[in-house]
Length: 490
Ligand code: BG6
Image 1 (cartoon, rainbow, N blue to C red):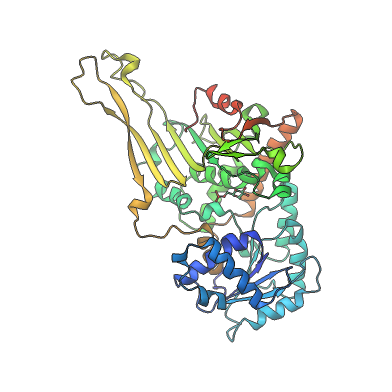
Image 2 (image 1 turned 120 degrees about the horizontal axis):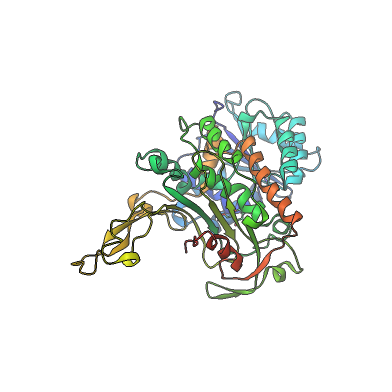
């Protein structure tokens, strides 16, 4: 942890979609709760030719649209913290004026404060922006750099970006966002695993049969035509969010909840991922159909042309280490699926010997292996399925039924805000805590695994199969698990 709290936050891409939907609302909510450093000034910069007042107006409209009214308490105070400097980041010219603006808002204790920079711009602007910041003297020891995805499109381009950033910032000042790590329920995975003694002894291939991770969305392209068609589900969702979820489920216990210890353990898992074969993957692309009772167009129609980009992928992954030998991790993500749900299912093995099987019921006893379902969103429930005896006199033998032991997190923590993931991440950036940010070696291990899958697809001529919107991907996704005798949790 670098030991200063930033007193200035510089947002690149300040008029963009992420700023409007997430960053400004998160900062305003933190401000309303009195959680931002008292003197924190926020400087927005982008190409748009607006002034301070124009930026505040834009911010106000964004807050009214994207932040619930009850969390907008201190909106006027928050808007007062904002200022703006127009900049074309592709050329060096405007950076001196930007640096001047940053200094102006710095206040009298400039020497004790620090600057946090949040880069949410097109990746093509990363290089020129870093060069401009260096030129203007905005890369010193008391400056942190936060990067938003996409960080490249493969290992090579990601390394180029990382090299460019590393030339100006040491790794302990680089904060790579994976917004899933800001989600309370994702952080709770660590609490569930490492604050309870129950799970650790059974968290391995002796007791766990397989793990399923599903990140399903109902939305389609959402206007992100160029970006998405160049990315696809594998790079957009698996490379980052899903592999981070997998790493949190599969990692060894870190020695402490500290940035180095946690990230050391995650990267070991990511490096232990076995390259997946084409036959262990399925890709799909949505066609017209109905989601939530609404007719929706197909991907090709939204895009306006034919494309081979996958909007769905399912992968059977393996973590090659002692703990996970022989335990498949089935990953599945897609757009235009029947519901929005992110969940992790840990499926335990069957009991080694059923004492009930002979008691008249045989296979009809209802005995099922246990499972643990961890809901990430929208439902934040943890459900352990246990077997119980169906009440009765058992004249035909004992009958068993699965019953859920369920924790509904919002009920367990009534009165606590459900915060936007970026609230936590922005606060950690300002304070300088890297625990929930992704280190370079993690990003690169993620890309290595994803690049190998893409190479497999290319070598085997894999193109996405179609699926009607509102379905769980192409039927091959079902076959992927069924041939192992496993059904997706739905
Ligand atoms: C983003 C992807 O990283 O995550 C989007 O680029 C996706 O395609 C989004 O919709 C999902 O985030 P969340 O928090 O809504 O699950």
